[in-house]
Image (cartoon, rainbow, N blue to C red; front, top):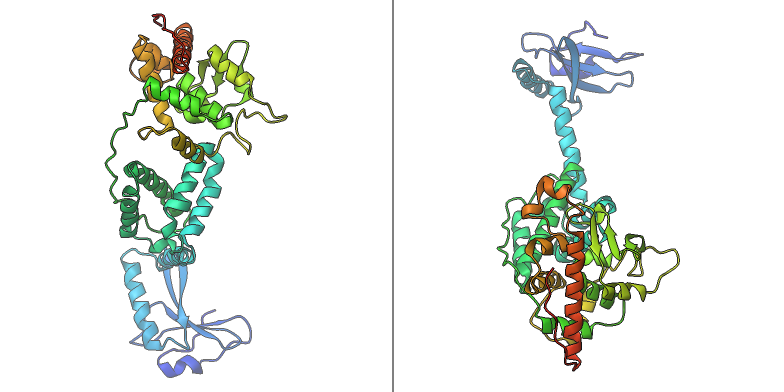
Length: 412
């Protein structure tokens, strides 16, 4: 409670008696007083300065500091500054709380390294990512951003990020693409980390994206045949052959499940969760494709057709390098197969809208509402197109093996 003894000068600070119970509050007095300043004294004799004010009709109290380190003059100066804040409509207690929270964030960030944040991000996010995305994001953070691992997260600068992006661009012919993908992952990580109060910065925001060269690599019939014949008789080889027969996306086949295959109808039924455009898709299978799948060994209790660990095929890079060592072609990627199938079917005379439907490419007439309500459209045309394409591949393979075979003209 308030004590009527006066607090006039510095000597009074330690002269005023301590209570035997509760605490005593001595308000500043005299002509030099600071309105709202008070000395709180507890039974043990500890003394501290407080500032009292009213906010929203309620009295509030803010601790200034211990009397052992704050003199009366210092406390008065601080109280007058706080009073000016109140007079301007401010709230010293709320302001102090904000500063404390900010300091807490900054202290926590100071103890966090880039690597610790990256690991936390992967743990939080990978549960909702496709296996292929997990692989890519993990590679970005653990390998491509490895030079930043030991740094405190809030010490990472825009210059550091820009320098590493330049290094990634110069690494290989597709460096611009790799750098942009790594930049995107890093941006997402920092956005998440800020939301989790793990950092206060975003050093990625104003860095430049690299100019990407649009890929237009198409493998010729001869190159496709060379790749087909060189593929190993394993999960990777069978996956790539199915890609060559269907034009499907890599992870749609690499992550294929037995429950998605209808052998009677000769179809792959992809749920929307496994399709890039988030629309369920029916992919017809030619007899050649069915033959590959029927010869694939099934593992009891495992739904995935390919791969050994959880999920489907996880690593594509190493077997691709081994394949490149055998088949020495101009640089190409697995995704180029999809473009090659599209081009090859067009060369066979298959109409563009049928080709788009066959490889589940949504654009033009298939975009928007029409595409949603036209999912099963062109089913016969799609099957005819893939059967024609599979027949073309068989002819080219037979010719490469010395057969005197000519393809009959056809159109789908």
